Length: 272
Length: 272
Image (cartoon, rainbow over all chains, first blue to last red; front, side):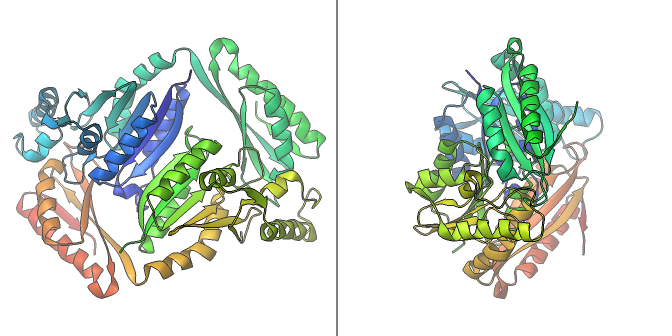
């Protein structure tokens, strides 16, 4: 069994080409390296109905994990919690634990004299602690808005802020250990080799041959030049239990492919 | 009416954190600047059923345009055309126009002595010209695999290669003019200002006030510092017809917000 994950990124800035989606890249890299199978990334606008639809659709596909990023802050366009509530048909309510977290943050800022305004829990601040019923706030080690954990059937949904440093801090502190525990001793291995002087269309049947002889090894070619001046990265990956020696599996496939490439007039470059 | 678009990116490399999705960023930026409303970006694995599901779901939402990237090449993992065929319940068949395009490319490479192998139309090469029934190949100005245009009901779907330079060349040559024509004289305008010494939670009600007084102007705050050392970018956007003077609308909103920020103890920085 593999643990599947979907990532949902909320934010107009990602859909108007203002912000490059480094959050999805970072999260998918971390999760993959923990042995999780990231199946889908969806980016959606700051609209409650859109967010609710995307979350409902993801839950229906029954992944073990869903991570959302963005839309947890104090401004009007932070609508992820409202979207989750709508998707799950749950009420939004001031969560006492989350309120204590938010209040604690502002008191801390005031104590350190870092707060340019009062510590009053204004509506915008209470908003960050207004969660769907039956959800659990998660400590945000470096920012104000708590993360949120929601369990729905067999799926665990984590809602994280969109500010990269806060998203990364919550993932590392709270989520990564849970994923590691769920995945057990499965690991993800990868290796790259490069091929020159062989077109991708010529390489294709060689890759087929090596893949069919090496179960579990996935081989993907990435043309870095253009088809008529071929310089191709071959990226080999495998996710397997440690005792199945995934690194050795990869190395065997790399060697076989390198031999085939050279026998067919190409130049194979394998980094050690 | 606004023209809606969805972007679908196919490729495991985007889901394992290997490749940063610059294609979605570039496409959404171009489309937005042409006045198109990009509603959703979906990233999906190199699996026929997954690709077919994502395309079917997107078509059901009836956007005017869908653009897919990736999965048009000659290798086994290039499965986008198979996914489109499955989604639309159409057969795959060697497309004569596409075959002529692919053949022409290899002849051109050979003529320029850039071809390290024969010009023979191997199965891997024919694959790039094997399209779903009733689709139109699109000239690829710099690579081998043609783009594809499929009309489904009121939706036009364009399938583009994943290699960024090829994707960009096809978009610029063929798709951008079509989008421009569909959108007419509507334009997208944006402007940024910055706020220091004011927390996002304090800024939130000020943004609400300015937005409610400036119809069509969307204002989003992006915290660049942390909540307790606030440095916030305010990004204002509007999509409107030229005669509605969108740039003037933005400037008016910026001025109002700057005055409110300063009146509430913050520092507003507006670049001219």
